[in-house]
Length: 355
Image 1: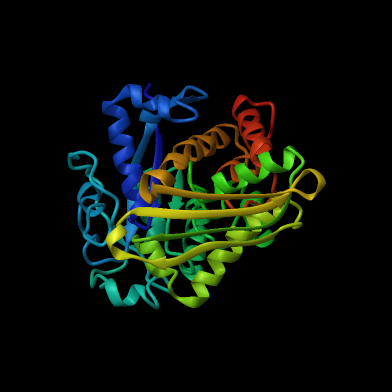
Image 2: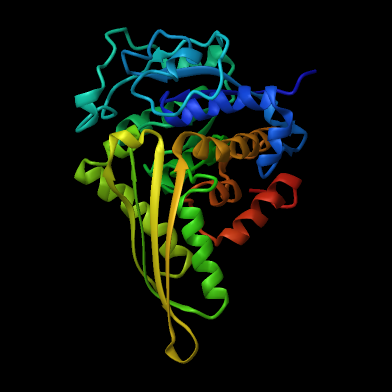
């Protein structure tokens, strides 16, 4: 019998585009699986992941086959390959607070009727729901979290809205024995990972970090969304806290998106600056530039997260999965450093760690 992981996704944006294209690309290019940290997990290869449902509110996406919707003009993830029709039609979910501020100026909401999300999740056979809505869409994220609970499927929160890290939501999923992971998806090789990694190496070498910043610019829709002051501050707080928690708060830090540049498209350019002191007070300064693509970068992490959640489903483990959260997200319910996060995740996969 074929191993399958059936996944539904709320928010057909750049991460969804990276995930859908990544699934097909890896099916056609087996050797490319070596670029993933875990080509196989508990006998689940990347080709076991299947998208069976999708929700959005954008007029250019709703009613379209998923293979077409991910290339809507508002998405900036490049087209890496031609896709055959998936048979999955993007359906309209509730708008709530998902389209406000700057997004309301560029997204036209579909006039199609909203579907019963819980019913559609059940009918699709989805085992988990990936939430990839815009930053700050708290009511919409909470709606989909509750929908996952009602449909009795796992919930993967890619947004900064606190779900896995919120005691109330954590309790709900634990009592229902349904897996929950989040919050705020961490890119495989993005700014946060690189920043934490460099700071950890310097600290291990006895260097006392005094000040640091990691600022970036991008042309993606998520960056446009964070031009809204409240959403920018919210996202920045999450990014800064993931660094501070790794270093017990003993560091002056600024981290976040500084501006939206449409011509960059899906490219994100990050700038890192670090100042510290070493032996006999000798100063050390580091200045780095990093350029990545947002869609594939986030989707690469999801390949591991999805399979980690499937392992929990098979083991009948519910509630927040601390190991998966610490490995794949910026605001997990339990923080640890990058090195330990990888150890926890691998121990969870091989069964020596329960959650």
